[in-house]
Length: 250
Image (cartoon, rainbow, N blue to C red):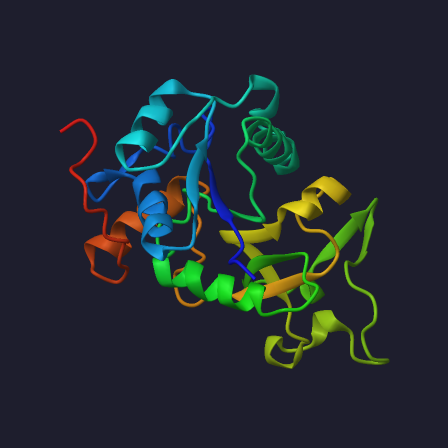
């Protein structure tokens, strides 16, 4: 049986408000987008690596670092609240009409610059070894446990989570004694394209967890995250994927 044909999809729309231009903002000499493209190329997994963007300036950066941008994302799929399934379906359908079909896809977000080629390979090995899996999603142990979260209702509040043992409410239990809970991060997602076609979702129902290690799941969401990423690199506490190309615009 031939190996599945996998496409790497990198979403890089413009218009970020918390960190303006974050997908092409320079980190350690290169636009941050370059590190995700380089990790994808270095993984050796993908038949094609495509960047989905609504901006020609971002497309030029993507092409410089070795990704394809065969078409721009329509504005209706590039808003602040646009769900991923919209641009995923648009992209896969458009590619299929052009005679380019894939068995599986991976979403690799540029805001996770410390993801390595090995991260992607490990995730694929885990996903492809699970029988009947629909998708895989990167997760890490949560720092703030939902057992200690509350819903405010008028003048009172109630625990977010039910199901605590009698006499031992989650909110009064030490973190170490709480049941393990995991939160998704931005490192990567993998899914079969059939799941998108059949369910109009990215994940489907049978979702495999991929536990990221160290800074693999670090995500840049706001200016504090950006500052921390720069500091981690400056202090040598985090390594970025090797780019192997001259800086864009040099």
